[in-house]
Length: 268
Image (cartoon, rainbow, N blue to C red; front, side, top):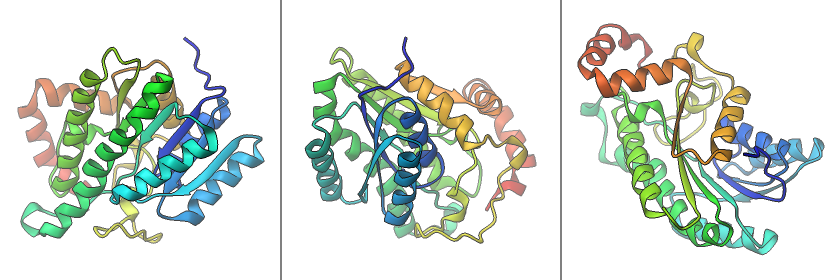
């Protein structure tokens, strides 16, 4: 199966930084015309300029996935510009941190509005265009959707929901020509730890995740795009991520013991 995307139109939400930005570079390297969306327009333009300098084609379209009208408008603009959509990557997301007893209702709403509702509504509105091209919908989940840890319960809840959405959507599009791939990364270098509970970015904020386990974003983007090309239904990567998912599914008691004993130092 070809891993090229020549002539394909790819839309990536959350495409101005981290994994979304690197996926945009990787799709462009493989021949796709890329549209990146997000709230920070200046970061989107940086991504577009980088792709253009490398000889690729890209556009930036502002979009807030917590606003359904914004999603509809962005998609309409893509169709006006390109006439089609072949791959939609619902990547926009962030992490609300804090023990459950300390989280407010607004904290929960912000987390679920972006990571769950925003992702689901992005997929909903892309499906008609993807049916026309027998395209691909891609949901960016996480190993955190299978294995939980204290201090980030709202984030885990959102990623557990993403996995469920991916499993259901894969069933619902079966036979339509559209495929759904749910991506479950382990630790990947990104700006997620530098975004606060209100969704605001802080460049000087420390990332307390285990750096020795993190993949570089370019490496992660390559294996993700390979999985999308192969139309995998669910794809988990990094060795530690695969191990965590296996243990989470088959030895949850052992996972509980390990995380409660050793995992506290990685809490934010």
